Image (cartoon, rainbow, N blue to C red):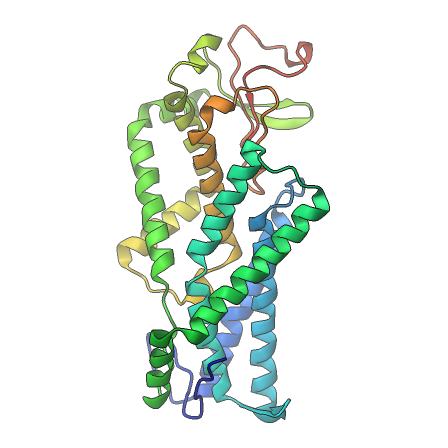
Length: 337
C-alpha cells in the first residue's frame, strides 16, 4: 500500500488558512459530529417497511465510516503524539485522514449510483430470485468491495498521490471537492427542470385536484380522472406529472438547496457532501426514473417496485365513477413503486 508523507502536513480549511491547527481540528470535529447527528436523524426518520437494498446497506456503511473518522480525530487530538502497532501518530495525521477520506468520498458517487441502478433494475424485472439471507450477503460484500476498490484507487492513483505529497510539502492541507457530486447534481436539476417544463400545466392541475385517502390502511395519493383507458394511452406523459408531484412533495427544500449551491458555485468538501440525506435524495430520483422508463409494466397485477424510505410512491389512478375502494380487492390501476 502506498504510504503518504505527513510529517509536515497541517490541517486548514479549504477556504481559509489558519496557524492554529488545534482550532481547525476542533472545527473539523464539530463538522463531522454534526454530520453524524444528521445521519442518525435521517436513518431514524425513514420508513421502517422499506425492504433491504444496496442503497440502504451503503447508507449504513457510510454512517459507520463517519463514526470511525470522528473516533480517529478524537483519539489523535487527545493523545497528540502516540505509537500504535509500531506507527507513530501525531496531530498531523488528522490532515492525512481528512484528505484520504475526502478523496475516497469524492470518487464514490458514480459507483454507488451505478450499482444501485443495477440493483433496482434487477429487482424490478425479477431476473434474480435470491433468498433474503443471500440478498443481504450479496449487498454486504458489494458494499465492502466498493469501499476497498475506491480506497485502493485513491491510495494507488499517481495523480492523487502527487497531489497529497505536494500539499504536505507546501504546509497546506486543502480538502478535496468532488467533481462527481457536482456533475450528478447538475444533471439531476437539468432533468427535473426539463420534466417540469414539459408537464407544468398537468402538475398545477394535479396539485389543485390531489386528494389523500387510504387503501389497505396505508395513505395513498388519489389523482382523479375521467376514464380508465386514458391511463394506458401515452402512459409516460400521463405518469410524469404524478411522479414530479410525489418527488417535489418530499424533496422540494432539498431541490432548492441544490439549485442554490449550483448557482453560487459553493464548494463543499467531499467528506461533508457525501451524506445520507443526499444519498436518499438520489435514491428517490432513481426510483422515479425507473418508474417512468418502466411505465408499461406498472399496471401489471403482480408488479411491485422498491419502497422508498421517504417518498410515498403509492399513487392511485381510479376513474371518478369508482370511489368505493372497499368493493375491490386491488384496483387494476394501483401503482406501487
